[in-house]
Amino acid sequence: MSKRLVVALSGGVGGAKLALGLSLVLPADELLVVANTGDDFEHLGLSISPDIDTLTYALAGIDNPATGWGRRNETWSFMDSIGALGGEDWFRLGDRDLALHVERTRRLRLGQTLSEVTADICGRLGIGARVVPMSDDRVRTRVRGDAGWIDFQDYFVRQHCRPVVHELAFDGVTLARPHADITAALRSGDVRAVIVCPSNPFVSVEPILAIPGMRDAIKASGAPVVAVSPIIGGQAVKGPTAKMMRELGLEASAAGVAARYGDLLDGYIVDHADADGIGNVGARVTIARTLMTSLHDRETLAGVTLDAADALASQR
Image (cartoon, rainbow, N blue to C red):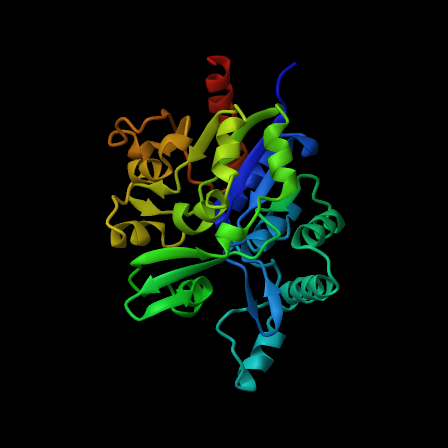
């Protein structure tokens, strides 16, 4: 009997795009999406989970196609009013988006876990695939720039990624535990593939991998691990990945991302633009179109990634 379950590690817009593609080519009960929560923070008294929300909106088909984050057909009366009152309006919360944050915050204060809240909201939005936070324990990504340590959302949104990045840290990660559904899935013996979505390796994927036991559990699953490069032609499709790599003294390339993941990877999907310079990255390379501008692109790349994983599994 062939193995069925696909575990996808996701953060940010690129991760959500591939997760959507996977949801289109897999039965709902065969996809488990692990969401980065290192980006989570508290703002205006609300608990914000940007990567979970980006995934949720994308999988529910209600995401904003222009930005990749937030909800489509959004209105901004709340933020306009906050700004007029002199409040902090640098992190934009649309009126429809705000409802989710208010409800999440209410439930968390009642004692529900983040994973319980996420599962219920996904169910109410008609999402069949499981979306699981990497941990119910608090982990917060921090960035050290020239002026010292700042919260990730301060760096990413308020300062528009302008500070030079010297170091990254994940506060709380040493005490965090992988969500039980993730470890149970990886130990089940039924994992077809672990897919590392085309997300920023530093602030979207590494917080997941930094949770004690997570990387070892992935390796012990026996499933092929296949990553999709977030870099095309030396540039990130979206976000500060290439900038961060250069500032941290790393090669801003698809090969540089593979080197960052190291021996975790069995397979690696890179764009045609990087085919000539990819070289030997210690994983089997598949060349494909990785830019996902349409729903068809998402679905096609998901199929390519699964085919690459199946080919690796057949040789074990």
